[in-house]
Image (cartoon, rainbow, N blue to C red; front, side, top):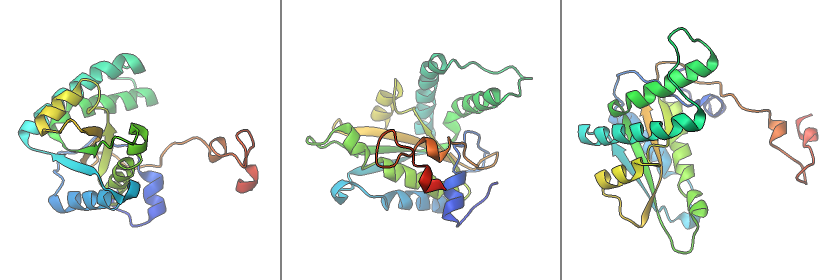
Length: 214
């Protein structure tokens, strides 16, 4: 399943994280629609205290590549990752292979840095509620247009100071996230998730909501 879709339910259920991209560049009009969708997201008090920074110049892509390399060095031991053997076709190997390809090619893609201004009366968790919906809107708009996208950790770990300096992010702004976007090599979805009944309770913490699904 791939290609553009106007069916919101199809978009939601097939917006799988894409880590493998073709060499085809993302045109300005398509990218702008993703950014417009991000702008339509809700934010606390409608403050819209966000900034979306598109990174696509050779100089900025080089910084992204450095940030990706630093992130990979952190997540490899955390997730017990290593480069799969060529003949390994297991699901874990396929997933790891795509992850390594994404990091190896990090400097080739357009990406977007999402920043949120800090407010002294709000916690970072609360502020996240004002920027993460914008990121989700971006991801869904990308999927709707047939693009692939991946939220990364490259603006965290040792990559944050690299990106802050390269972009010139002021100290009173926090880096909320970073998304790579491009045209996918493979297909979208369907997403793999646990059954809904495992996530939903009715009127109490330990009360199954089975009657909702009957």
